[in-house]
Image (cartoon, rainbow, N blue to C red; front, side, top):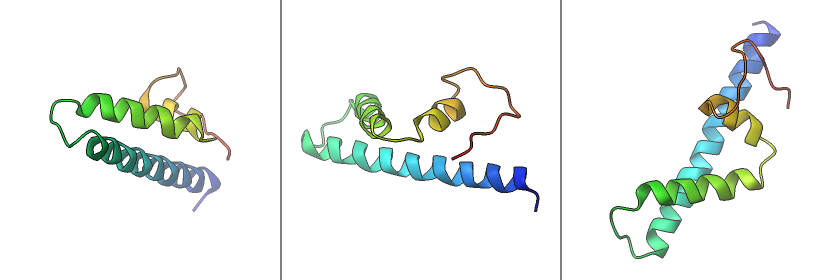
Length: 78
């Protein structure tokens, strides 16, 4: 396996871990406000903001989500 493939696999794993953290935080927010329906998007956005604020992986997440311009072949070294 070449280094580019390994780097992409690591990046994919890191993005998956970030998503898991965001999902867990969103679920906490949902429970904290009494499990009321209809605010799922707000919970997700708040959770995403909180998790990414303290993460050095935020640029990788933003790039993968299409929030920053990046070329397909660019790799982030962590």
